[in-house]
Structures are given as structure tokens and as C-alpha cells.
Image 1 (cartoon, rainbow, N blue to C red):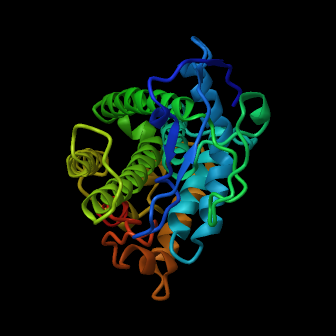
Image 2: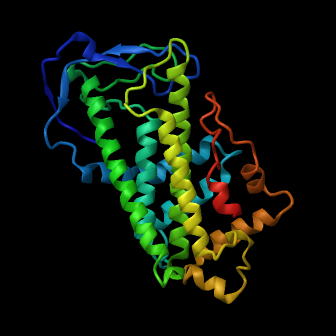
Length: 322
């Protein structure tokens, strides 16, 4: 993503010091690094630029997530890859009904992954603003940071856009679920709900990590007014609401306990052979005594600071298992 910068006069030298929380492990001394006095030019980072950037990353991020946790995240990776493939319109067969809402959910998930998982770094033009690669051991080694204020401005812009997008998705999803013809959009509702719940799991892990860090001796100061526990409490409320709404769509049945051989249930998937293959494939695995997906869903999922995958399926298993 390309942005334009302009110099400014900082009010103190401390305002230029990075505190590198992202990428640090439990109990680590949080690294610090100096930066130069630059900020974003007005109008260089509009919402549509953020949207386009995250849309372009969604497919690769889904692939990356699958590679990193293949023994613990196969089901989520399967569903994410299906959704990104459908949204990319790589199939000749008609896409599922309501794919626009799934695309918004994937955009939100990608935006969150960019915000929490990957530090802002410079690809080209670093020397023009006096920034150079870090000589810090670990995940930061060799990376070139943005100036601190630019980093903060990007964070704020992404936070604002994520809040806007989350509200938009929840409103559209609620409207779709409460429609009289909601059965037409069953697959889109399922995918959107799963992706949102999966995003809430990742967000909750990050809030727990902040809670851990701010309370430990020598930890990192929490930068916001609201406490991290308020945010994961909010996530639980949204997850409860989403799963309750999804039960309306399935008439209270667990989606993979339904008889998908019945013509009335097959009609929920429309004419998409790919959607039928997805649902039937997941159901077949769940019915297998040696099911990989069942093992993932029932694995312990309590927060661990040293394990970013520790909350996998904390909310999404309620959607899958009913």
C-alpha cells in the first residue's frame, strides 16, 4: 500500500520512540526503536484504499493461516479458502447467493489480520525519510519500521474502518436473516457468521494478551481508556447474538446434523455445486470416528499468552456443533 508523508516538528523526542508490542512473546522486555518526524499527508489514506488493500491480501492471508496451523486449524482454513475462492470468482460455476456480504466479512477478517498480526514496515522509500532496518534479535530483525506517528495514524485509520465495517456487516447480516426468503442465502449467512466468529476469536486473543502484558511487572502500558477485558466481553456478546441468529436460519438444528441428502435442504445451497461439496465434505468428516475436524473442535481452547492459536474454535464450534 502506497502512502505519502510530510515532515513535522515533534513536541518531544520521546514522541518518536516506538514501543514494539506486536510480535513479542510472553514475558519479553518490549523492544524500543527510534524513528523520524514524519506524518501522513492529508487525504493519502482513504477508506476505499484500505478496503482495496485488504481485499487484495485476503486470499494469501487465508493460505498463510492454513500453512501455519495445519494440525489445529484445518476446518477454519477449509472454510476460509472456500470463501476467498468464491469471492475471487475463480470458479466458472455461478457463485453463491449473497456473496457480497461474504466479501465484506473477508475484508474485515483480512483487515484485522493486518492490524494485529503484521507490524507496519516499509518496503521501498525508507532512506528518503531516514528510516533503516532494525538490528533487534527475533521477529523484528532486518525490518524497517514506519515513523512512529505514521504507524499510529495507520492504526487509527484501520481501527475506525474496522468498526465501520463490523457495524455494516452485522446490520446486513441481520437484515438477511430476518428476510422471508432467508433460506436462499443460507450458505452466505453460514460463511459470514463463521468468518465473523473466527475474527472475534483472534480479537479476543489479542485483548487477553494485552490484559496479560499490562498487568505483569515491566509490562506494556495499555494505550486506550477502556480496559481490554471490556472488549473481549463485548466480543462474547456479539458471538452470542450471532449464534442465536444463526439458529433461526437452521430452525434450531446444528447445520451438520441436518440431512443434506433431502431435496429441501439441498435447496438451501442453491445451484452452487461448490457449496454442496463444502457442506457435504465437512459433514462427512464430522461423522467419521477418526474425524480431524472433531478433534480440532473439542481441543482445549483457553487463552495462553505463548500460543496465538489457543482460542481457535472458542466461538466457531458453537456454530458448527449447534
